[in-house]
Length: 211
Image (cartoon, rainbow, N blue to C red):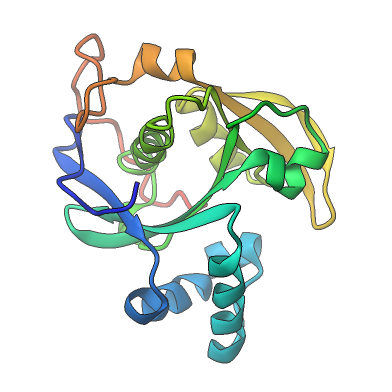
């Protein structure tokens, strides 16, 4: 998961999704803008000054248990993603873990890409890349229990709720996506999101949905 590449094609909206590693030099300005979006800052709490955010990113990038990515739709940067190894993450202190369990955090920074037309399929595209690690059988998420839209998107992308944990900064829903469930819905073929069994129709958009 280390190059933008040709991407993953979503036949439902005709778009290609791709991801590349986050770079402070290339991506800081858009990251700064996104973290100051009100609908982002209410969940991420990172509407900080530029020096503070740069220091935060340097720390995050030096953390070897995780990788940071920028997500693209048809070559346009629209989202930010974090992939981590669960056993080395704080969430691993609250749940039973298996070797190679992964987790993810994300935000959609460009408002034109919020809603059901793009958000669930972007999540699925990133999960597809996480499952390229063949030893990974489960991917975890731990959204704020109050973030109903993200919980709904998680359910649409094969996550199941396992419970609620009280973490230091919030009450989080423990969401688990299992490899078998994921590939029963989404394609295992490289570069393709949907299986042929899924009807290829454009989903109804919800223009005001925010994460």
